Amino acid sequence: MPPSRTTLPSAALIAAFVFPLLVSRHTLPLATFYGEWTAACCALALVAFLALRRPATPAATATISLPWVALLFCWLAAVGLTRTALGHADITGSATLTILTLLLGAAVTCAAWSYRRSPASATLNAGDTLAIAFLIAGLLGTVTQWVQLFHLEHSTFGLVSTYFYDDNRRLWGNLNQPNHQATVHGLALVASVWLASRGRLRFPMWLAAVALLESGIVLSGSRTGVLHVGLAAGYAVVAAWLARGTPREADPMRRTTGLLVAAVAMIVMLLALQPAIRAAGQLLDWRLFDTIAQLEAEDQMSARGALWAHALAMFRAHPWLGVGWGEFGWAQFMQLPQVGVKVEMSLHAHNAVLDLLAKTGIAGTLGVGLILAAWLWRVVRARLWRAENGERRETVLMLAWLAMLCAHSMLEYPLHYLYFLLPFCFLLGWLEPAAAGPWRVPAGVAKGLSAAFTALAVAILATMWQDYRRAEAREYAASDIRNTLPMPQFWFRQHAQADAAGLAVITPQNAAQLLPAHIAAVHLLPTPAMIARTAWLLALTGDAAQGRLWMERLRWYYLGDEVTQYADLMKACRELSEGERPQAFCAWVTDRSRRLSAWGRN
Image (cartoon, rainbow, N blue to C red; front, side, top):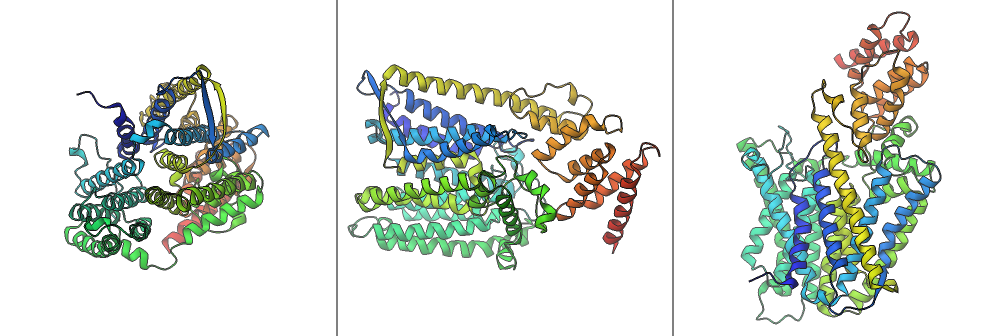
């Protein structure tokens, strides 16, 4: 029997949510490229399917509406374009990629909103479909963690990402970031409660799923995962309140008592698994990260606090439009002495609000805040206060998922990754009750616009694939043939150029030629080695004071690697003749290197 057309959206939606979270390939220069590219392809396929499908009743005109929440992404894109129009160069290429990502997010939001209002949506139970997707992703993610625990990655035919740390192991599944994997488990925990409350999971199966998911949270060593268990338990309590009046003959997990038991069981399960897995790890030499000790430690927020201090400093220096997309690392490096706190080198603030303030200023942050506040008011009014109980339950489910992503975003930046951002956009669009419009346009024009958007997006994704493969090939090629390989044409060229700059041999004769590429590389990623190379180039081109200032900033990085960098500069000084050597700079470098070495010995 051929597959039913009515089941295609459910299957496609599950695949679009699950596949990107299971991509195991991670390479340089962008470790998450393959997962995010897969997420973009899946999202584009869904958008194209929903936009280009044949309507049940063909008409000469089509109605186009813009869900109000989609303005969130359009507004941020407009802020980015405004910075460009004011003459701010996109040195890293991140601004262009961010604007394209925001436009894709707006398209996904519009597609979700539009599909919910089409007759075809009657065949799609969004709550069940998304819950199944998140539960599958969470369970399979946990399986990959257990594979990594026993070092079995090479027996999985490339389906499981290699874990390469030997001590303090925080197993990350196929996402190569343990906190991200823990968030997937948190989403899956909420999904499991929903499916149990719908009668799709009996208690024994639900308990087994929770045990597996929470073992993944423990293996990730993630404090964020512990927070997610609390949020999932809170959702179970709300679901129990909504289940009042369920007949006594119904499945226990569908009744208030059963859901309250589920809330308690999730917390008790985590409290039991944490010491059990720690004890097993000590016995079997698993060398796991000790989450319990981390939770009990003092001063847990100092690293985040330093990043937040830098974000606020950027906002104060650039209050209206921020420093721009892709410039956080450069701005952080430039203001290190002024902020005066030890900080990790980062490209993000690890807090969504502060990140927006730093990168988009008042214009971007205020717009986002107003749009989201208005969206939440409309959702509460239309889908909670005035809705029937079934719609109210589904709305609470989706708000719980959004709350998890937002909670994680207060401590990191999961929404910078497409496999989290695009589901976030879908949930926003699905819950949105209102839109601007409708505007009537000829059906042919509407189809033509949809086809043009799809064709342009396909071209962008195809060229991104080709250019990333070129950048990747150069990253892993032997040094003697690297410069013979083709450079990326449209995307990721900055990464390839930074790699080439880092490998170039510096001489007094080519210093002026190499300096711009090195400064651009520091804009892209201010690593200690690239900072030291650029400082040396500044000294060789007659700006020793600026070179000294660059080197002094290393002391404010947690991993500034000062001893190594000063030693390398001292060696470079010795390799030059008296006439070529910047004497004052080299004397200062030699003195600093000896002092740092002495401090290290003491």
